[in-house]
Amino acid sequence: MLRSPTTTYSSSPNLMCESEQNPTTQRKRKQPNCELMQGIIAIRSDLKSALSEFSRDLDSKLEKINGNIYNTRTDLDSCKTEMRKEINQLRLENSTLKTQTSVLSSEVENLQQSLQFSDAEHSNLKKRFDEITTVSHATNKKNAILLLEEKIDSIDQQARQFNLEISNVPEKNGENLLSLLIGDHWQNS
Image 1: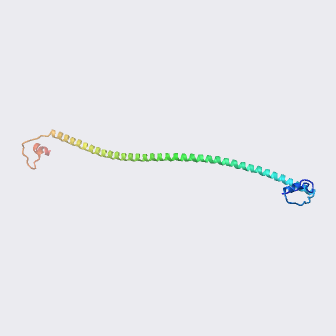
Image 2: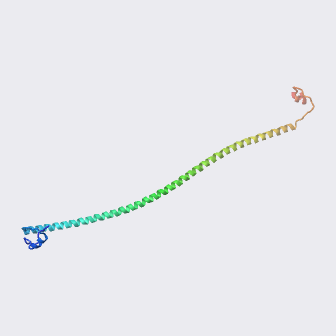
């Protein structure tokens, strides 16, 4: 692209140089007015400075954005690492809890079996106690009966100690023994 010369000449003094670069021939154009040229140059420099300032502004903002993105990535990576650690720790705690739960479950089963065994033993002992109590009551009653029989025998023996036995006397039907021994006299009194 050919640009307007920065010189104040209305035409290019070195024609040979341009023709060597571009083999086509060009017509010389009339150069714009100097005031107009200075205005264009001023606008151009203003645009350049505005664009360079915009570029610098954009670059600084992009750098800030990149820094924020980098910080956010770093924060996310640290959060991710922290979350992984916590997840692994939770998994470990979960497996520990599962192990403890299974141990407690087996202990509860053992306690239930022990309790059932104790209940069975208790009912067996209660049956035996009831049987022994029944036998004891029967034995006590039997002993009481034997004791009463012995008392009756001893009372009978005491009553017979003072009895008199008469032998070889004939016995009649309807005979009153007291009237024969004591007589009628004592019975009427």
